[in-house]
Amino acid sequence: MARDIYERKIQQIKDEILLLGSMVEQAALDSVAAFKQKDLEAAKTIIEEDQAINDKRFAIENAIMILFATQQPLAHDLRLLSAMLLLSNELERMGDYAKGIANNTIRLGKADIPIPIRDIEKMADLGVSMLHRALSAFVNENMELAVRIPEEDDLVDELFNKSYRAIVNAMVANPAIIDDASFLLWIVHNLERFADRTVNICERTIFIISGELLEMDTTNDEIHHETDE
Amino acid sequence: MDINNNGKSKISVNNFNFYYGEFQALRDITIDLPANKITSIIGPSGCGKSTFLRSFNRMNDLIPLVHTTGKIEIDKENIYKINVVELRKRVGMVFQRPNPFPKSVFENIAFGPRAHGISDKQLLNEIVEKSLRQAVLWDEVKDQINKSGLALSGGQQQRLCIARALAVKPEVILMDEPASALDPIATLKIEDLIQQLKEKYTIVIVTHNMQQAARASDFTLFFNMAEDRAGYLVESGDTVDIFTNPKEELTEQYISGRFG
Figure (tube, helix red, strand yellow):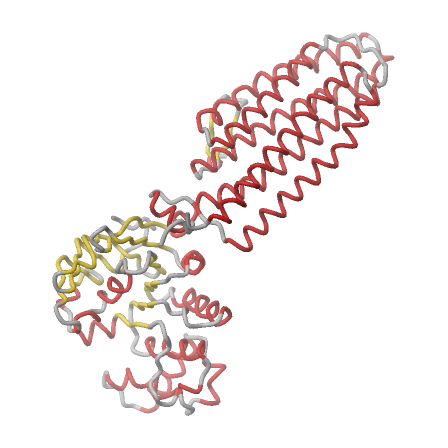
């Protein structure tokens, strides 16, 4: 192979993206567990550990910039490296959503809000599962999977709407809980945005494979070309 | 293979084969090159890029045992039906190493127009100034117009050669690795100059420098060498497409440095 060192460096960055992805997955799972168990110590730890996610994102960016400057990547390499630049940013933001859930868990404290928590758990499980599979689609360049995952975002949106209505209804029924319940609204919002970002990861994976920039418009359950907008 | 730039083609090549005696150097090339665009030809050493370029103004005619089949047309005129002196006036060439004549800057430029019958001093002055301005060299040499062309820097010498080619009012300019002997700054000046020239001329450039092809051209041809060492066209297309999302695996491998 003519460019062994270059290829090894690209592979290392790919590995770092997967590592960053698994840190974000873990942060999301931990934040929802802390929320469920009202474990404020665990929530604090998640907030502190977000720094490691931010640091990794910058390290990945730096490594990619160095390859741009020194290796002049083209074609598939160019698409892969530019996509990974964006993926590192998406993952870092997803880490921020986990941190947001932890923050609001602390604000909620030990308050009891009378809403079914099951839908929130489902949103979290689905979002993390979507991320896990989106990273698998990315690393294996699996077009079919990258196209299919965004469809699941509709279900997350449904769960979000359902939870949102339940929380607002609880607020109306008992205005005394409005402050605490608004923290819950932030938590479900963070989970909804978490799933949206997995759609972006799929879009970038499709770009790596095909060179096409598609927007996966899950609202209408259709795939639109960006230029159609 | 058609050009896909919604523009008109300047050079049409149809089923072109090129032989050095028994050896086939180019096989069955069919391509239209767009007018007023910069076309770059890339490919590994020995794939026939320069041979192809030099076919456009019949520079290969002087090589013994060379023969060709197929057709090359400039503005729908078969190049073998055009007087060769006239053809080379229409299709100018700039070489890898700057090769000014051992004469003054002025005489280097005036040489071509004089050979084509222009003797009026005033007119020659105008042609020299205009050509040097087009080659973005005038401001640097206007006070040393009678100095030897060989006294200029390498980058200036190459722009002098481009000015010399422009002086006979060509339609097409062929460039065979025009910046490979120049430093990076002089190279960028040549690339900038080429961009300016495409408004008036059709430019075809052979380069080994992938980044140069990506930076400086609108349309790219990728040649490769077959097992019998005959060059063939693998892929052509808009430069942006070739360098970001080539269709052929071979192109992908070549431009990302996996072979060649």
